[in-house]
View (cartoon, rainbow, N blue to C red):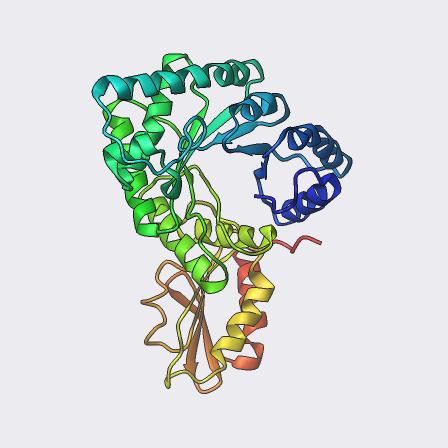
Length: 361
């Protein structure tokens, strides 16, 4: 998501260009007013001049009319069911069944013009539920819970289906990875029970920065990807937007959801290691990281060698003081190579096995 003011067209296009350079695939912009809506065609024009073709998502809060107006300019609109129609007043109120249904009818009435424009412009919609912004209606019935998050999304989803709109993505975001994980799992179960099958956008919102933000995102997003859930992801960091993309790619790579580069296996080293494992691993990564899908193991000794790297394509294993053995799969193909020559011999082995490609310029 861009951090630039959407009305500052040049700043937005510059930021989009930086995101494009690191292979961000979807660009989201905040649209808080009509001036921001009017800026979108100019931003698109600036992207085209730079040869950038990325889908745009408009992020809308509080103002249904902006969501309606923006459909013709973007590929997707994101709305928050907690504030699209409702205003959070933190009121404690008991709703009768009839009163609750009246509130849902009010939501439906407000959604109808949006549904019409979404269909007209073939625009997708994300129902973006946030743990911290559930409506008073949902809070009073379900509390500040994952169950409340799920029901908040389902209320909207049922209305969309009733009116024949199916181009919907859902998200269940929280700054707490445990809440986020539980909400997504509950959502999938709830959709299954109603025979709904919609894609999921994963994210830990307000994750922070530095190591904390990265770990929270990896725990939340990675857990669900390992469950087989998730179709798009966003890592939310309190940093430059382009810093989020390598983290997202690393999470996808680690969960085997998508492969971007070579996969490296290396041991932490110990007193049995007789070469500079850290420096050697970095040398090998610099030389081979562009080999998409190739698994390379760098192991300090024979103890952590063949067994621990069983699924690697190639292995670089310490064999004794200053000596290296090379493996192809589980088979040792060269023994006791002098350490100063071993990285080049590893490259040669990869080439011999037909796995080498020259790095892109």
